[in-house]
Structures are given as structure tokens and as C-alpha cells.
Image (cartoon, rainbow, N blue to C red; front, side):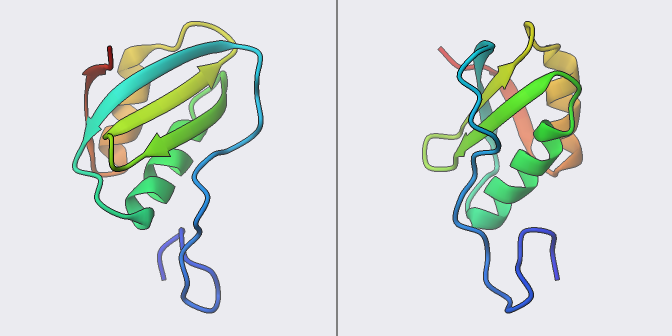
Length: 93
């Protein structure tokens, strides 16, 4: 069973961690995400980066919004996304 699944085999529907409203908001473009498992995997990986307060993943738009205590290190975010099995293609405009 993957980390996004509950004991009954269903997947989580929410993809936002935390409720941070303060902090620096950065939006990244991420390719390869197609489902709620992808959302959960990216959310978990990026949430583990030091300084990240919250993560919101929009699979349909291919966007990951990060709220962090300070300007996030793009290389660390990219590494976390890569380790989750997806590709950060840059900051979204």
C-alpha cells in the first residue's frame, strides 16, 4: 500500500498541508502528475523540505504552490519533486 492510501485502500482527497497564510508563496510547474497519488507523493516530499510551511498541489494545472518561511531553495524543491518521481520544470508565471 502506498503512503497516500488509507487502511481501507482509498486515497486521500486533500493535498494541502497546513494552513499557513504567512510566509513566502512560490508556485512551481511540475510535470508527470496525473492522479491523487501523485498529489500525495509530491505534497509529502515537498513538505519535508526545511522551511516549508504548506504545500498545495494542483494536478490538472501542473502546479505546486509552496508557502515557506523564507524564499525557498529551488534546487531543494526540485530534488524533493524528483525523488517523488516527477519533474519540476521551473517557477510558474
